[in-house]
Image (cartoon, rainbow, N blue to C red; front, side, top):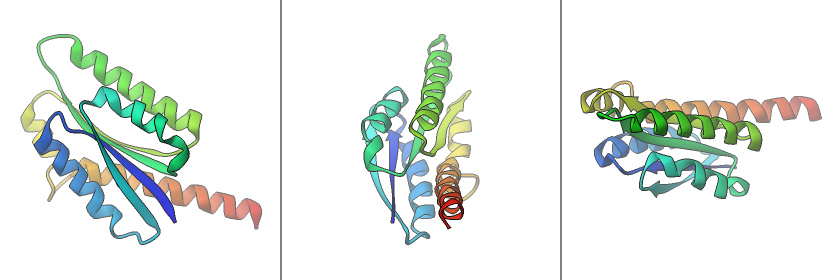
Amino acid sequence: MSKVLIVSSNYYQTISNNLVNGAKDYLKDFPTIEFEHSYVPGCFEIPYIINANNEYYEGFIALGCIIKGETYHFELISNEVTRKIMDLSINNKKPIGFGILTCENLDQAIQRSDPNHGNKGKEAALACVRLINENKSIKNKLNG
């Protein structure tokens, strides 16, 4: 049994709910995957929760939305969150499905979180599960 933690920002609640539902719906098709869900206030807090829970889970799914505003804040948050999530994945040797939307406007976020078409939460869950399974397959070959 593999344990996965979904970490989602609830800053844009509707977008977040769509992403989380997409991820959960996908994960339910895998009886060997057990998952839990944790909310954080914003995307900036996602890496902290992943790092704090690294020893308890085999993989993570990071979900949220950052929408461009009139200031440089969008670039700072987008770049640093993305960089830190990649660092955590490499340093901790665990997959992190990346489902953090970086959008120009709310309409783009709605499209990318659409539960019926192109849901990026589902895509992030798919990536995490594939990497967990691939890692197990490689370990089995090396040990077999």
